Length: 401
Image 1 (cartoon, helix red, strand yellow):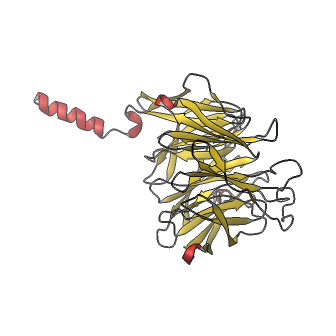
Image 2 (image 1 turned 135 degrees about the vertical axis):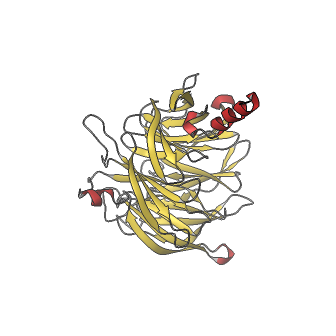
């Protein structure tokens, strides 16, 4: 064998090696309820091993209760829920530098209760869902929005009206907006409202960033508690996860002419556990609550996290679940693939990397971030690659890519 032939063989073997066997490095950011954003480095250690650890300097101060992070190519945005201290939240923009180093650019004191945010209007504006009342004795639940320039410039506040307590009076005593979803066309924002069993629809003025409410909203099943949602590939189907019913509901989504709103037709409803409890012949724990929903990067699968279902718990090792479903590309319907361990308790949120071979899970129950192998060809999760403790109650983790 010639030296050239041998060299070509070695290079081919490296190119065809499993992803976890190659030298890889990634940066992540994690928000925790102790007021910190922690920047993490994920590095391969060889032979399929990975190491996940914080990058010095210490974690970035981010208000009292940072709840949601938004990544762009240049900036990181933080929404502060403000669960403690004065009833005043914050929206913050950081410059995202080398190795994920964050440098404060601007911040605005705003209403408390912000649990989710999203950029819209081509990144020129930011909308935030406020789960809690904006101040003592004030109207409950709202959406705030801001034009992004040299400063955050607030648009008029959007308060939600409330017809009365829902079927679950402990959790549905008021409107509770929980997420901002931008539709694939960029023409609408949708807001799941856990307290009202509605998904509100707003049209976007792309020139100014202002939002206009469009009726009727999507009416979810009474008492279901809509929490988060995602559009399927192409935007024809809308997948809604409901926390109180532990369900995933599929709707056919149609955009109405002249920016008049959106129409939703029920397609399917299934549980958020991919049928795991039914197959095992076990009752679903009363404290279980569905949390996050996401579309896989390839667009072929839906993934849902479940909190406090304890499906994979062992003695002194609590672990909740991640459920996966395949999508029928024509009908939009879901077929369960399987239920997999989140590797820890209370997976409030998770994020897949762009390549679609890893998922980072924010474990609110133990303050850890776990990175789990994911197979985008099958929709199945594999082994835990690495984890690290970053703070008290990790509520959001994202990939810096």
